[in-house]
Image (cartoon, rainbow, N blue to C red; front, side, top):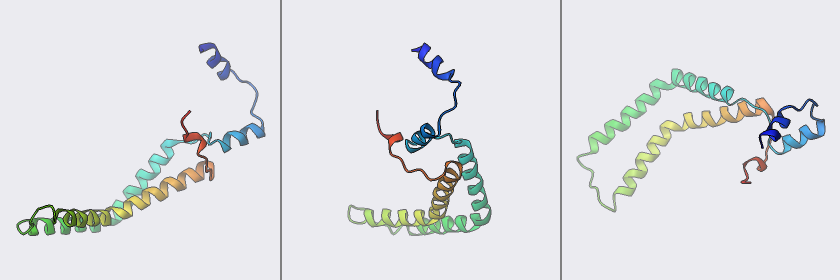
Amino acid sequence: MAEEEKKDQEKTEQPTPKRRQEAREKGQVAKSQEVTSVTILLACLILFYFNAEIMVGKMMEMTRWILGESGSFIIDSNTIQPLVQTLVYKIFGILAPLLLMVICVAISVNVMQVGFILSSESIQPK
C-alpha cells in the first residue's frame, strides 16, 4: 500500500488535457479554502463596519421588547409557538444580510478560483 502511494507521488508526466477535463468534470480541482475563508472574514468585517450600528440597534430593540413584555407573556402550549415564531423572524431579519453576504461571497470566490463546476460525483459516498 505504501509502495503504491510512493509510485503515485513520483509521477513525472504531465496530465493530458483529456485527463484534466475528466478530473474537472468529476469535481477534482485544486482550490484554496484559505482564500475563501479570508475573503468571507474580510467581507463580514466590512459589513459590520458599515452596518454594526443598525444591527445592534435592532438587537437592542428586540431585547427591549422581550424584557418589556416579559411580564405579560402567558406561556402555555397555545402561545409558545407564536412567540418563538416572532422571535425567530426578528432574529432572522437581523442576520439575513450577513447570511446572504456570506453565501454570495463564498460562491463568488469559489467560482473565481476554479470556474463554475456543478458535479455531484465528488460528494457521493464510495
